[in-house]
Image (cartoon, rainbow over all chains, first blue to last red):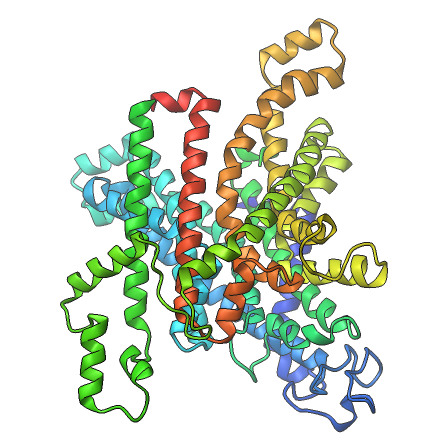
Length: 283
Length: 306
């Protein structure tokens, strides 16, 4: 563990990513304290005389949106939405994916084959389209978005865990454990799962980046969390028609999505190198 | 080889069958009652029963599924709520622009990813390598709608190099293709880099160098030709990735393909169209995967024996 941390610390980009995630997390947690205004309040002086949004300035740091609301406050509360969905939805996806991949890789036979055919089937659907179809049928909202993203995102990690479990299951220590009378449950949880934890951590981190991007796309398409809850993708969707006159309405939330997704990707990549030094420089 | 081919083909058909079961199941989750929607508010129970029988909704579920599958196989995807036209021909008429956009995106990602990957591999561990690999992370972390809007703002609005959206000319294609392909370019640069590093380790590369061949020729003649093969095998898989992206990209650029159709269907909650596009997209993904499966053994004979 000490070595892992030492290797991770040597990766400057991963450390930058970690710091960025920390800053975003703080901004999200303390949004009610930091935000200068109520994110849903429409200000009379929040629009120009012609009714256009205000550019960044002293009163409204990041300007105002088409409804005269403070962009900076909306951005802070949007961080809550992104991080909450990113962590919870991906957490569910990773749990489902790990459990199914583990069982499929260890059981093989009929159980394993049917789980893997299910992942084949899931891969036939474009993730965004399936998420949209589900979100269109069910009423969109925070819980549904989390559920939909989890349902779409468990597949990749299940396949990775499956492959690793298959090769681990053939090791002699597993055979030894079985010979000593260990049951399937004990082998799965005590002898296989601990060896897969590094992989799970890496994919869980990278998966948050994917989830943040998918959530942003869904809310850009109007099928994510619903107003008045602020979400970055929705902020861009709402200001799309004003974009050429007020480009900051797209650039600022857009940069927030990019930076948060990038931070999780950098940390995930750093973890992959740190946890598995044999892979270093090959990915 | 023939055996392998038959097995992949059968697997693809099975997946398509699975797709039809999933979409059939999804239609049952729709909260709105289709009978009530067609019959309208002032309908009598008698009228509603007639419609239910007409739609076959009084039949047991397996029989309903069999009818549904029968309709799908003949290309009948139902009627659009919003457009009052058949979904099948609607989707088919929107396919050519989308396929053109995907072709453009494939060209864009290869033109970005392959040179970047080769360059990074030959500068391994140095600044240029690290910069290229960091940029590849930036490219896969960029939301496509933000990238698309930014390109539009800079290259079309501010500098007037390209038109502000539209369809029909090559100049219309460049920005959307770049938007759709940039993230793939990032992935390909990483894959090309590791594939190249792998190849350059081989003994025949050392032999070529020992013969006194220039580094450029070693890289391009012996390295590139072998390193590119695993990348070519991946192109079929891009279809699946692009199918999500086109919804966003076509909307941003006003590109009249199935992505825009999907976007409009989402706004009006036109569920038959949403399902129709999903089914057609799934067919293309299965086809893309099948092509990838068939190309791989041609490229790497070791796969054939498996």
